[in-house]
Length: 223
Image (cartoon, rainbow, N blue to C red; front, side, top):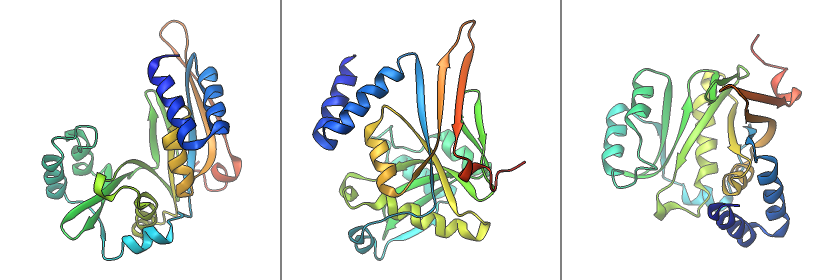
């Protein structure tokens, strides 16, 4: 295994214990020739009482283009979490929205949602989501606001804002060898609804193997 995988295993052992670390090793072995993505859906966010208390007085709203441009400037030192020009163009074209969590005038975090039911997963692969579900992607919490469970609060508030549009569930996916993100989505209340395996095939082709949970996908799936 490469050094970065070894580091990930050490962190997993420290943070999540032996059982989760063994699962991660198995995941590495399964994904040797490709990528395994775990598909999740969220209907009932599970914010802690502490998170609810600490978020009192915070404002949750969809960002304007001007607000996103300001955040882009403010986070110019943090390229991993800075909204890109492409992100802002998605909002400008109506393809996506960014919900802000504001503590007064201070950014306490953000999360993004795709406006279309057609969710881009990986190059060459999209999923047509049920009518009551939108793809939730990207999330950020500044250092001073981490550790309060605000991610779950944002999911709750995001669903509150989307309810008038008939949206009751959020969709997301996580690479199987990303224990931190897997732990985070499960802690937030996301439930596993499928698995997508992506393998490099010969002749510059990609092979997909998709397994879906019928109870989530069939009942309200778009035809």
